[in-house]
Length: 481
Image 1 (cartoon, rainbow, N blue to C red):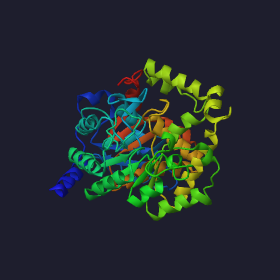
Image 2 (tube, one colour; image 1 turned 180 degrees about the vertical axis):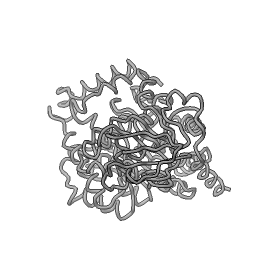
Image 3 (cartoon, rainbow, N blue to C red; image 1 turned 90 degrees about the vertical axis):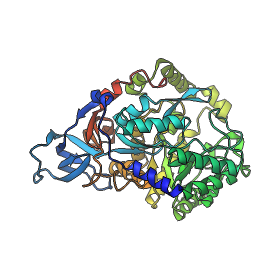
Image 4 (cartoon, helix red, strand yellow; image 1 turned 120 degrees about the horizontal axis):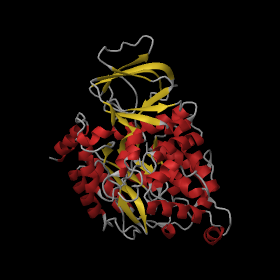
């Protein structure tokens, strides 16, 4: 019975896209039976170098041909877009893309209106929510998007956080033991989720039970852990670990089994001393590789809290925020650079976080180059300055800062996510037979990665959405809905 249900869920996840409904019409720029993108630069997501002067033809939501513009056959009935000076990349696959936003005092508000639009506007055509606070909302939102009632990306909905006793988050159910973990996983798979995220206070017994239950039914488990170390989670069979090396408590002094040290999941002083090529960080990389465990990069949320004055607060981000959210973000930025607060917390006027952030960049680069599956996300939480879509673009830029070439960074943000989700046969690269999930960018991100912010049109299943109109529709809204 359960195997049949999992098969049913799988078939639903790959069902053909629905016809866009009336609510989507104001945002649609291109909707034709056959479309040809001509004379465009193509970064296909495989990691291969960009190819200039290409033509992509797609119909019925799928790619029919990709090739040199000089020899391409363009159907007579095609709507032709001449894209000299533009680049097309695969739709981004966001692997830590929540549907909620920090409201303050440990409370988070669902952004079921603004975030789906911003993800799509930013070129993100598929997401994994990676932890849900309102899983029913996310599931219903997925249904609306899939049926063409509201604009947004394709969604892999994650179940509610698998959290243990002592959590700081009021909105999270606290598991009472392994049996509760098993019941929780099975209940939410029955509702339609296909991924789970373990959180900071879960015990090893609860995590092991959750992983076992999820794997029996074809679901995967990732984790932002603290009470459980990475190595312990790997031994239990976890599929993915969130946030990179920042949150591995294995080497934190006085770490006790099944306890989060001082309620914190990171030690920036310890991190700053480590080396990706030898010692504990190198050994951790090798352990992850041996057990085929993926790592999700969420550099934007750490950048926002690590550097005074960095990143520059873009006008487009401030414009999207509600007045209250904007005020809170700006106030948080001031506090993060307050010397007296730094002295109180770290005993120094200088924050240890910039050095720790640099080590996180080194870890992610070394992990990927050694053969690890590095995934890309944004995590729109923290200080509130990282928001849907824009943050996904910033993640790609920061991967370049870590040492990846722009083409490699785009590969991580497209191909790798699709591979992890089991969707690589349909999305993640630009190839004949795949879904026409394509992002049209003005400029050349293969040479200037900041051009990835210049998204003009996002095709999802062959329908082209106007990025600017989607962004305008949520101006002043993020933080409220």
